[in-house]
Length: 153
Image: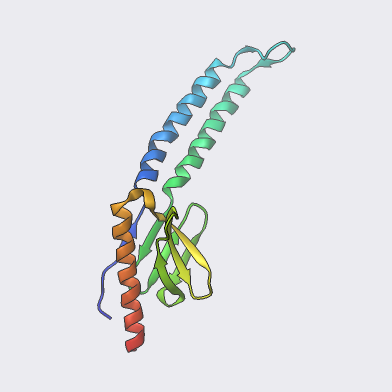
């Protein structure tokens, strides 16, 4: 089989937004935490250091959740495709992939499998425009090359 190379793709805009937004969330939660002192209202409760620490902890957890948006990645070669989404991953040989599609109105590329299942490839997102189109074309070329090699063998 003639090698058409490898494809590695990650979302661009989603990663940029996540890297900007995560520190902002931590700063906002920290500022809120610093403002928590004194009475809680009309009742007998008072904000304490533990409340401030908990608020900062919530900010760190929210930032970690936002940074999960940087996790998607797709790696493909002539043998198969490895998809890593926000939650979960797939390692698929090309012979189980029926088509590589970028459906109208869908936010990301999908792999249509032979058993009528679909695998979302969140690493190739419509918002990345030309970057996504190039990644989709390269994935389709690898898929086509693997199909052609399968017919010859």
